[in-house]
Length: 210
Image (cartoon, rainbow, N blue to C red):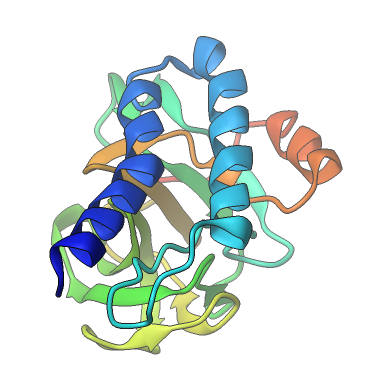
């Protein structure tokens, strides 16, 4: 790669990743608007970002859909009373209650980093979407992909279950930026109307886990 192309590639990476490091430490209440703006800026970059030759371009895909159809939010992101081990603890994702065997979809294009059994997550998938963006899908009953596979947004990657530390069938879904869990709700929608519905979801009385 020539120095000019290397510099262009590095600049593109900086443009994409810089806002992430400022946003990832935001609280749930104070950070929602910031994540909304971040999501909008990432979508703009995804659609209109600087072009580069295929060999040097940085593949970035922004999660922007529900990972499960027809699911009910049973536990939101943030501090909560843990349903299995008790005590108030940080919940690093969102729990979506659905029957065992319900298909789980990749929420953006990416590469499967892990697809195996992992600690209290049970059967678990992690997908790399570029620019330090990762999604995680836990407590699955079955896997439909393997580590190293490229997946497309909307592709079935597994099926809802209750493996690992779980009280009933549901999907535990996380979005991570630079390895840090962030509120996944802004990344689960493709319209402002759907986002408002998700933010208003009742988080009490459902099933959950990690």
